[in-house]
Image (cartoon, rainbow, N blue to C red; front, side):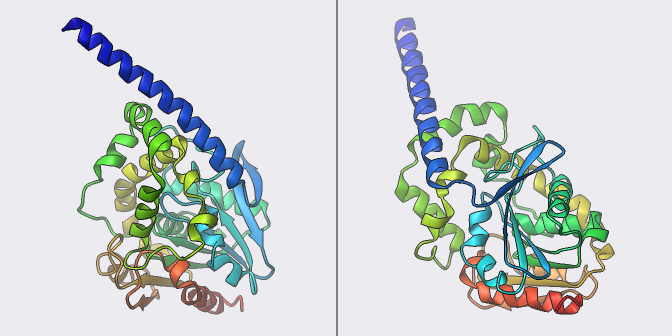
Length: 316
């Protein structure tokens, strides 16, 4: 019996070593296929990846959970770049921006470092627009950096404390042991069909548009460090939003909210329909039949909300 146990343990270790090797190979392949789109800005020694395009009033775009700059540069940023100077950031730990907090960067820490990066790029008081988790960071920016924002645009934002527990995967992947044991196998062996199915699930009831996956680069999200950083941030988000919510009334810049009526990931009724009552003067646009990814499937409507915010702020 002892011999059988030793054999099983040896095989498991060998499989784990193979997974480590294959994961590293897949990560290198993803980074070769999807290199940084923009430039690296160093903020207090922390590398932050930023894509800058267009001319005009400054707009900062912040992607959601598991995302990167390519989510915003697929559809929304090119539209905005016709009228604005657009700065698209990778949030800390994702894409090509470095993680700097071993416990997971809080939404306030992310707002601080991204605001400082924007200032280095000459955007001292931009319009800030964020989707989903990026909406939470945008709210933190508006509350904690009020002198460094002209207007706020929230796209399907996670804004009101929720009651559902964190899913099992993110609970496991947010821990050091869980990350080390499980993530190499996901990075190494997750089949393409599974990744495509998961991507379509984010867009439901729509599906990912043709060409989106080839632009976005799911392999960047599947890197071990990115999944671990993302899970740590997700694990902390509820507590952080709960602490921030009492301060929403302090937001005094023009605020536009865009949310799809068919969003099952961040519910319209729970979040945005309640949020408009907490931010003075906030305006809500509901997009019939749209799911959680308006910045991709309804980019013109989101761009129109940014136009309205700019006009209300006196920038257009």
